[in-house]
Image (cartoon, rainbow, N blue to C red; front, side, top):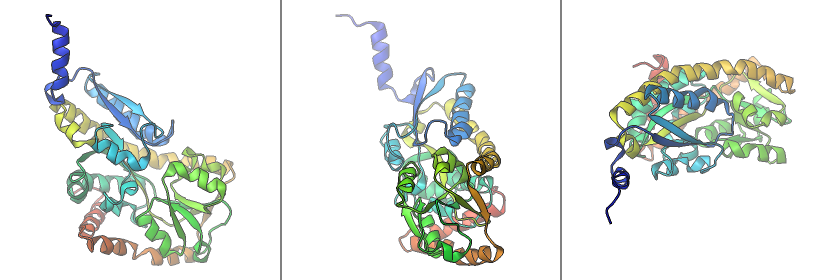
Length: 342
């Protein structure tokens, strides 16, 4: 039977790598664990996708799967590596066994704004130590990211005013560097992904959380917490979207160029938007009955002194396992000092 020309063309298209195909109707699958309407999707992910589609004149589109529809936050690296998704939200803390060095951007006291941390991490993860030691070995390529503003301690009952108030508190962390931070202050870290925090806090199995302000609202925790600290940076968290390296390699050059340009454009705007977003969110939380309690100067000084050695402890522990943590820390601190520019 004579094969239809349309059938033949379709069959050949399936056999060709992406790079040899026309960019027409190229759809990439994107997945994350964020709930619908999450502020980082609104401020970073969707603008980036829209920009790529615009820069490619509609040739590249995206199918987006939020809210752990395809997999949990801890599974996103594996799902991206295996090609189940093309682009995944990979929080390094959730896969700290695979990406331990990235936690350099989550150490306490390193920076005061999202943009400071974001631009420094961007340089290291796209072309520095983190790119070579974390992204290349995991066969993924960072597309865009934001480092969140410094985390604070949020509690459901107890108000934190002194270092002694921290002792014994069970607080949610993302693991790794945040665990070291809490242990330095005598608190008990409880490692879990953000989507699981509400249930644990509502059941009383935790006393509170290390969390960024925006996420308190995004995950409905504003109904549960009553107090928040101010004045000390307890670390941060990296929200990074990465693409499967094999998928990237097969993309047409003009699509790669469009994505790179969109990524360079979104980095400074997304972090600035995240920093600004806190103003309105803080008022909303106050209206919900959350009290913001600036730590007394003596407490700030004592906490900062206790936290001063966390970075070196973190680096030494990883160095002993053959990881280049000291090199990552030196590079990151240098980038912070230079405003993220080499």
